[in-house]
Image (cartoon, rainbow, N blue to C red; front, top):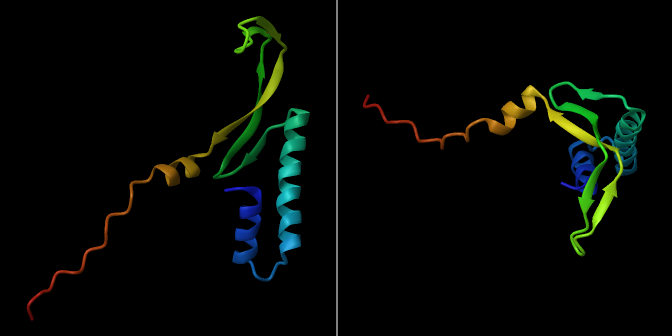
Amino acid sequence: MTKSELIAHLAGANPHLRQPDVELIVTTIFDEITEALARGDRVELRGFGAFSTKARDPRTGRNPRTGEAVEVSAKSVPYFKPGKELRERINKPAAAPVRAAARVPA
């Protein structure tokens, strides 16, 4: 799902909100998460998961085109750890097909 699809879905599910308002809400949430990670903070959304950053050490990499050694500097990368409720909802077994109730003679 793309950001624009998310906005369209939320606007459709909440007809009392105008689409520009939904877009502002979604953009604000994403911006706040991004700014918190840039500060080095952790963002936890209960039932969904936690966003944090992980430090990567400097290393020597290879240019795939030439095979030449390239120094890669240290950096922080975003990391997401799903919450228990999200994992359970994703991994729940598929619902069994609904069968017609057996007829009981009267």
